[in-house]
Image (tube, rainbow, N blue to C red; front, side, top):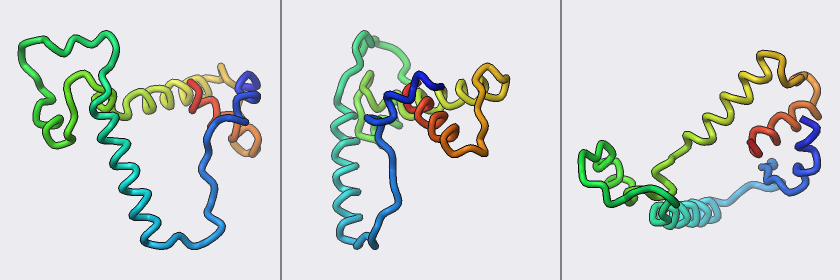
Length: 116
């Protein structure tokens, strides 16, 4: 886990707000997030054959999410969930030594989950 320590400086993290967030600001950030989502629904993945003719099990999901076949958003959150499960398996089996009661270890573990 100490290999991740130099990267912790550049990894994004969410901090508690120092003030109350107004409703208009929340709406603005929601609209920005939706715009980013819609842009990512149009970015194609490299190496994915999008011209394959055949059954498309995700057709209606793409219609609802305004996505195209073989785009970045078609991956969904599965890469994040998979990396989190692998990190938990490594920590649970003792391959990675993590003491969750120590704050610095928790921060290193969270940073490693973001990187891997």
